[in-house]
Amino acid sequence: MVQLLGPNDRLLRVLEDQHPDVEVLVRSNEVTLTGSPESVSAARALVEELIAMTRDGYDIAPRDIERSALHLSRGEGPRPSEVLGEPILSSRGRTIRPKTQGQKEYVDAIDLNTIVFGLGPAGTGKTYLAMAKAVQALQRKEVNRIILTRPAVEAGERLGFLPGTLIDKIDPYLRPLYDALNEMMDPEIVPRLMASGTIEVAPLAYMRGRTLNDSFVVLDEAQNTTPEQIKMFLTRLGFGTKMVVTGDATQIDLPHGASGLRVVMRVLSDIDDIHFSRLTSEDVVRHSLVGRIVDAYAAYDEQRGSA
Image (cartoon, rainbow, N blue to C red; front, side):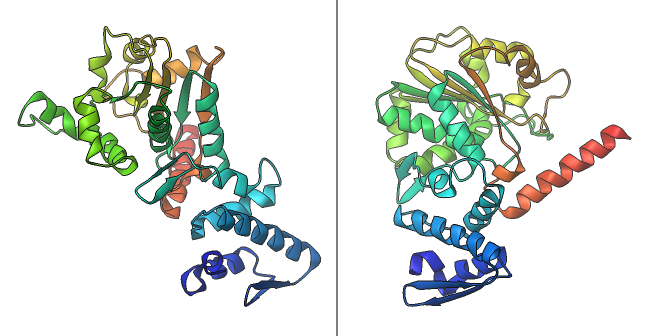
């Protein structure tokens, strides 16, 4: 019951906010709902899902209750406890798992297809979940190595000449990938795996001329690739390899020219064993404001385009 209600009944208040016309009374280990039959039925379904998540060891957050209530109101797809209850990876006391229906479909697509494109706005977990699946595949010995790459394109800023060696110069572009790796694995193990070549983090230019066998390859920020670059990357595919390409077509930082991600969405959309997973603002798992910011900018871009 403590897990279900949260510290200082924080989760109970979120539950009441989702069904304001239902009175929720908690005594000992019993929850009593009072209200109209339809409202009580909806609130009961939500409570039952939260109980199922708690029994599965899921650490419920306020945002999970809001997503679950929204999902149940639509009455489609698997139950929230089925979406949120399937772990991908457990590391350092944290369990990584999909948090939305869109994320679950994305993760399932990675299992079922050789090449998957994760498309969506910031905060939807595109790269994070792809890297979690990569670490999972390595731990299960489904692949022999992980290769993480992204184009070295500045996000609207001029960074100038960076000091140090070549590795020092490209490190700032690859830092988000290092950060995610250190969250998913023991930070002491990661340098050893990188030194042995089991994990490789490199800019996209380093992929040219290679054939990648028995690998899990993640290309991040693909919206900043040129059509030639993304074609070069995809044709590195070797035997026993799985590729995940992530990007957001609304955040292109290329100084000029077409985005390779937009081109590939048209060219490869009908090829078997290539899947396009489209995440939306409803799949944002950062602060709830991020989803609203994404929606506001989408509305602004649509209005500007029609003007």
